[in-house]
Length: 126
Image (cartoon, rainbow, N blue to C red; front, side, top):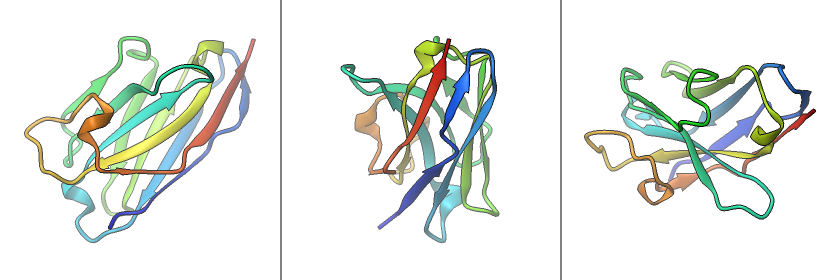
């Protein structure tokens, strides 16, 4: 069983930066593929970013490419989502997720992830 705990969400203004963290349990964190998803009110959960266990392979949604950066510190069992140039449309609950199936490449759909955190709210005011 893997537990994921997100933190860092808060109210910010458009153009601001914010870094989300996701702390994971488990002794083999470096083997977990990690993903970030978000869900805005009235919308379906959508993919934001993902990275491989080594951190060398990363994927981003087109809507965040160039503004968001996903990274990980395997020594701290933590994955990060650095969000720059935030826009009001980035407002959502952000979830981190873990895939322990050792895929060849990170999944970009929610179906590819086995474990989920409880989410952290990010609100971007205009």
